Length: 586
Figure 1 (cartoon, rainbow, N blue to C red):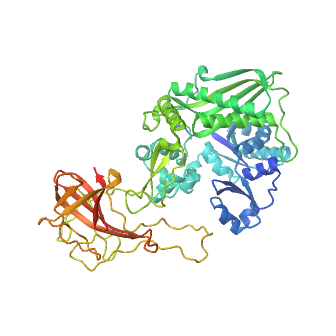
Figure 2 (tube, one colour):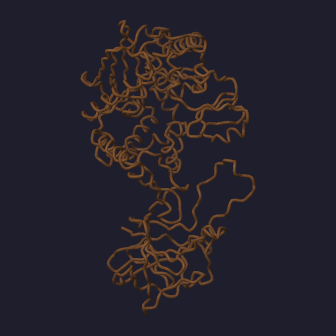
Figure 3 (cartoon, rainbow, N blue to C red):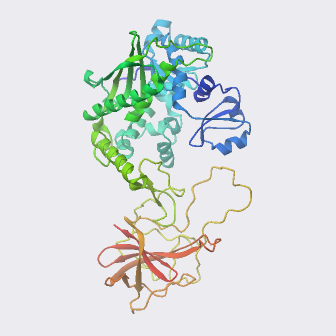
């Protein structure tokens, strides 16, 4: 396999903060934070000196530095302010690709040969950007764009062939994929070198297409898979405008329409865009061109955003910090052209609910959005797993398109296969159920049998005290949720539990005492007005005493897993002397 081409990447530290200074006049020398979704995404050097870091919540950042200036995150502002920097780089080198506002890249071979070496090229570009735009920047050079981006943060030039060793010691968080990094750490994979050592086929099978792409990055290989090819010319979309476009709002409307046309054309061919060329022609014949690059796949919305940002940058003529202004078009735009300069065959993507990620999936998305528009947002929902003690507590229904945040913190329950437990005199387990070994006595997770009548339910949770901690945000481990039902998780959770009756072999009702002693082994189950069914195996109870400090909201119950003679398995609960069917196992 050939080595990736040498890449030169220019990175402007704290760019969202600098963009706020360039566009809005916010002094970047003061403590400044940029917030998105109430969390810090960028901060100035003074703010870091006060202990502020990315990822902090707004309240905690203001607690560490009360005089901090808060700025809302605006990708459009960042892109407009970055246009003069890209124009300055293009005055020195050709073929510049915008990675994101604040970072752009180009092939290192041409500049290094023309300017007398990679180090000389890096110094020349940094000096020219500083003189033209009064913006501090750093350049990194390595094999591949991903490694060059990490090298730029250190202002480092990685020698040819040394990229794999350079990346090996970096933490997995450097991939820029928080969910994947968290999962890898929980699996014991902490560095990019550890991740790169995994077999590529196993990574693809376990983590899907995005995981395989991240695996290539960690190994120091080109972040563009071999399937990337130059698309045919007929994929390009062009829009002619009789009235020249010279306003940003009109440009935004034109960008959205053209982006949707391009995305639909690519989807018809089973392709997705990874690098986008934006070309514009003014009424006076002036030609403008810019290339935007993306590590993943550009959706229709992502294409529209980049086109809108670029047109905004051209039409607004944003000022640089040193007074430099890119050449503003002398007339409005009459022709706009989008060129998918890099595409991926979507046959390599992980199949979704509606098949491959292409036209079918886009039609499904549009159909669901249309249903929401007619019936309301709550008409289409998806399930999100989170923490909780019962299956119903662990599932939250989220409207389609909303942020998928669990109702309660904590990881979703995992199904852990294991050997069937032994059957004892206190609790019986049928062959249709899998249970975990019982914890030590006194644990809230321990199933309680009739042989231990003295064991009581462990109260879970505690009321919020008046210790003054309400305004503090601390990194705490995920709650253990004592009393949670062990795996496997049920296949069907009933929206409304069904009333039931449980009898022993003598026909007497089975009751659970206040001290969690079962009166007799359950033998028959009757759900509603149905016929009794024989219970062949059972385990429990799993007690839980919730919100005991609030009498109105207090809830005390015990749960059982039972297996019936017909092979079905149910999750039962007894509360206030009433038996209920809460869920059904597959």
